Image 1 (cartoon, rainbow, N blue to C red):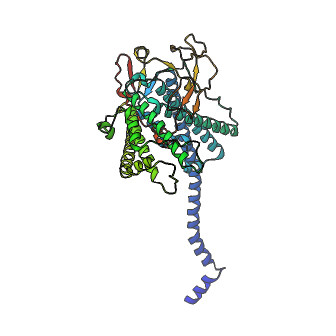
Image 2 (image 1 turned 60 degrees about the horizontal axis):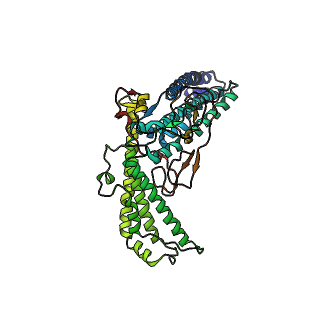
Image 3 (image 1 turned 120 degrees about the vertical axis):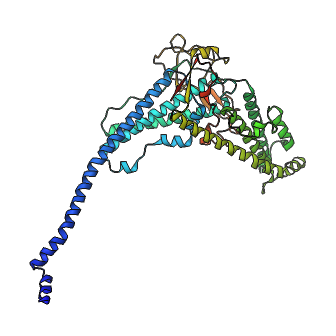
Length: 480
């Protein structure tokens, strides 16, 4: 009986086998079918809900930065310099490049994908616009708040570099947004009008202890550059037309300290007090970087494979006698530079988080009374003409050519000027003829010893503007 039952079950046409197979397979098939339906529902509903939430988030973000940009155009807001440092840091710049969410994007239908990308580029473009306006206002009005600790050449140059980079980035976002609109057959948005309607005047302090230090650093960087040029002439395989004389280490050090109102005995030069203002921090850090460049140059006379026959024995002996000290001092000053960079980054990040959380004031609004009481004479800032639509005191477009002017109220459409030219053959000075003097060998923050622009270090000194010393009747503090 048992053998017969087994034989019957093995028979493919046996109804017992069909029943058992049906009872075993069908529940599993139903489970798989239900899971498939549920997955299809999730794929059909969740991305749509997520898509709407993302679109709403981006639209709110764009509206917020648009409102901030409009306020910047109509007021003279000067943000905390540490906050500005964060805005133009490498980390924050990476967030301005592109809005990416691969897990979200891969499940979007084509039309929703392009709608989302269009809106993300639109929001990022508006954020770039706002940051540019923040940098422009900082450039024009910071020194009104702190004439004793001005931005100086280093920070101003770095602000100009970042303004230009942001302008390129915002235009790229607009181009990509337009491409997505073309695909979606949407009406193209008009090209964004970033420029400020302004009289083109700004305030730049040129006196004080910090400016003397900056000038001395610039002057010595030129001396060091000349020494490197003479060194290359003597090391060249070609015979130079003349044999230039080189300065010895003692002579170089004496040249550096001759006009520099600081030395190693000054406590704040070798230490990093937490109360140090950021323009001050930038200047002293530039001093450390300059000293490191000096000792690096001294050690270049220990290179192998170099023809030293054209260098006088007196000069060679002087450099070789200072090798041990130069190595020790180079390590010391390179570490000092790293300490300052880390301190700058930490303070910038901390200030940004505090302002974002509403724990401290974020900016100061410069009033007409503050401008009238300022001891700094306003000057025409041609280097900003690419971003400022200039008008005269009577409301008509006009060139001031360096003359004083009063902030007008006109918003008439005037042609843009484009006169800022980056020149690489002059010391680090800002020229009011519309050009920018820049020495690529200058060892300030924002450049390496060979003049290459560094990322996060482009702005390396920030003053806590939220604690401005202006009278409360003329200086309005507003939170973020």
